[in-house]
Each structure stands twice: as C-alpha cells, then as structure tokens.
Amino acid sequence: MGRVFRLVMLLSVAVLSWACDGEDVTGPAAGTRLRLAFKVALGGGANPALMAVPLTDAAGNTLDITSAEVVLREIEFERAEAALDCDVTTDEDDCEEVETGPFLVNLPVSATTPVVVLESALPVGVWEEVEFEVHKVSDDNPADLDFLGQNPEFRFISIRVRGTWTPAGGSAEQFTYVSDLNEEQEIEFPMPIVVAPGDAATIVTFVVNMDGWFRTANGALIDPRTANPGGPNEGLVEDNIKNSIEGFEDEDLDGEED
Image (cartoon, rainbow, N blue to C red; front, side, top):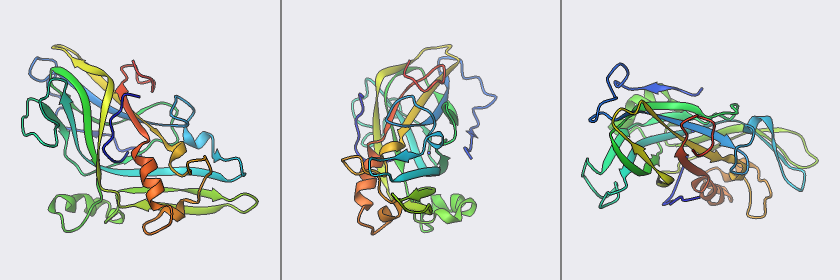
C-alpha cells in the first residue's frame, strides 16, 4: 500500500479548527488549507461503515463496535526532498507541524464517508510522508493537563473502544477495550501530495481497517476484553492497530485515493 510503519496507532467527531480560519492561505507562503479526515473501513477497502455490518467469524462469534477513540499528538508532514526524517531533524523547511496536541479523535464508525476531524494549513511544496503519535495522557506531563481537564477518563490511556461481544452460542456482552499504546507512526503517501501557490484546499484521508483489530492471524475474532493491559491478547491487538492505517490525498472526500 506504499506505507512505512514504525509503530502505532490510529480516531463525536470533534471538528477542530485553528487560527488559520479567516486567514489568507492561498499565497505562496501559506500554501493551502489542509483538511485531515478519517474513515473506518472493513477489509481495508471502501466498504460500508463498521456499525452497518457487525463483524463475524467462521465460528459464529460476533463483534459490534459502537465507538472508538484515539488520542493523537504531533502531526507532522515531511517534504519529499527532506534530508532526514522529521523525528531526527529540526529543519522547519523539511517538516511542517500542523498540530501538537494532545487531542481526541473519535473514529467515525457510524459514517459511510470520511469525516474531517482537523483543519490547519500546509505550505507550498511536495509532501511525501506524515508522522503522528498515538500517545497516552498522564497528569505528570504539563502539556496534558488541559486535555485531562476536559477528558479525565483518558488518564494513562490512548485508545478506548466500546461495543458488544457475542461469543458463538452465547449472549451479547458489553465490552470496553483500553490501551496505553504510546508510539509513533509514519505513513508514506502512495503518491506525493503537491501543494502549489494558489491551491484552495488539500484533503488527506486516513482509512482505518478496524476489521482486523480484534482478530487472530487466522481471522478468528477475540473478546476485546482479553486485550486490555495485562491480558493475553494485549500484544496481538496492539500490533493489529499499528498496521491498520493508510493515508492518501482525497480531494473529493470519497475515501478513495485520487
């Protein structure tokens, strides 16, 4: 898919807008208005939203995910001509930080099309990668205190998923899955994103394949509660999450690469 993963990840949808609202972002210095969107898909393709089709496996287990929330920070775009990765260089010409965070993203599990969750600005240039962190929040980090004031239930966690688990032949049971995953993810765009002077807007969509989050290698569904911290499937699900995201330019916001 043209992706390079180091580790991680990815997202009410809270639509956030920055001071760039109302500013002129059409000139050569400012570049373009950047819109970041998320879409939840089954099987990694442009399929119906997750809630419309509860997940099943060959044994008859069923999983219905009703909400999925992720804490993100430090979203940064990297130029195609960058000499070093953004996590090891301080050259602002090579790397553009569009948001520092932390902020909460609700993955749009009930939407059939991508949902914009962030608006910022991206300078003129050719951009080939985006980096961001899924980051647990702690009360000993001054940068996290404001976030915790609004989201106290996210203390020491970075991901929360809720829904219903129905084992084969059994009754439906409510579940809550949480993770303290704290890793950086780097996604290489299949085609570089070119921002030219005068461009009005650029849309980047991240497609999250949640179908595979709570499955074993042979496709069997697991009870998400067994993947909570200290559980036998904790590592399995974290690895699945890290490999579940792709990103690309999506100017018509249809969830497909342009």
